[in-house]
Amino acid sequence: MPYYIYKVFSFPIRRLEKLEQHQAFRDASARAKALRAASAPEEAGAIKMILAENELQAEDLLSQLRAPQPNPQDD
Image (cartoon, rainbow, N blue to C red):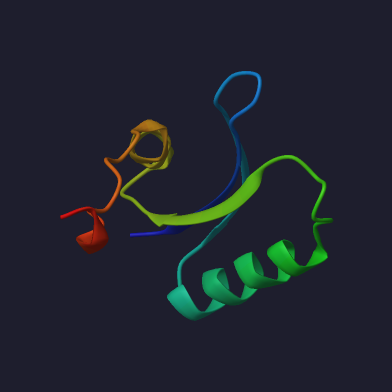
């Protein structure tokens, strides 16, 4: 399965922009880190890497909002 690298924008609407696709984790991870380092802090969008069977599944997984992790200090 390939690794996809996307730029995820959340404002004003959630939007995904496919940047690259890699077959090996090491290549995809290194490239995602390089893209994150090269982007300016004030630049909109986050660089995300995801493993998926195809582009459609990758975009579906990235579009789902996950529940926040429970905070043990909330008890």
